[in-house]
Image (cartoon, rainbow, N blue to C red; front, side):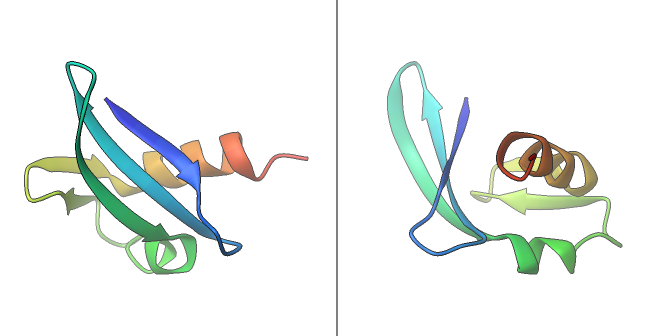
Length: 67
């Protein structure tokens, strides 16, 4: 399970990976850096998971940037 929470600065997020209720790893994510990956279909997170970049951007917009 991935938990995505807003970071301390605007446009930053903290992605937490959990497995069976235990926190496994944390990954700081900057929205601006993510936009540079738009040309790439998939990016690796935590050296274990592959994430579709366009879907992640869509999720972040829907969850955190809607008015």
